[in-house]
Image (cartoon, rainbow, N blue to C red):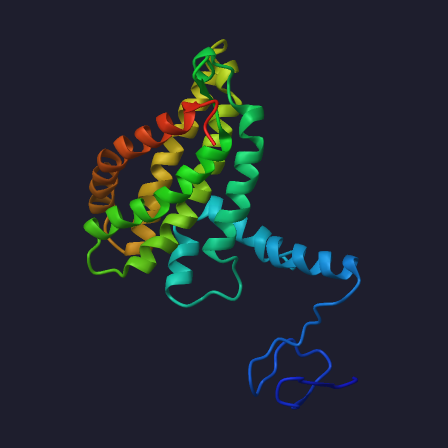
Length: 236
């Protein structure tokens, strides 16, 4: 295999090396065909090597598993919490205008619905929810709470997308309403199970802390949604 030389320290390296083992300099070329560069960006964003799909499966089927693994240093095989949140939230807020039930109170002469503001509001709520977690789990580092929150919000986006996509049908059909109720309850169970897995406490303690978090966070969430749903049309 043809070798390559680090332009920073002149170290000779294997041809498939991505970084210099001596100085840490990236060996990737900036000037390259756009198709090659686009492929690399897609790989970085979506983890097309399989980590993203595997992480999605664990995110939905094993509450708290990804945050537990990441906090305990098992990170190579899974998508990072930052990337997971960015990908899921991007997809969620792209489809949000399509799945959101039509409501006349979302738009009027003075206000206008804004998915962009929703996305910004939820991003700002990440550290807020993490701070609430710190109040309930004082022994854990704040960074661990941020990791947990990023994965949790990603899962909740998927759950809310499912709820909102059948909202109109749920108003008309009892079976769809029942399905919506099941999804809602499953989301509640998911949070409790994720807390238990990540922080290692009993079901009883995790359930009590879940309700405490809910009571503390819901008013903040409601205010944020209200502000994002009613923005002056001529703002900005």
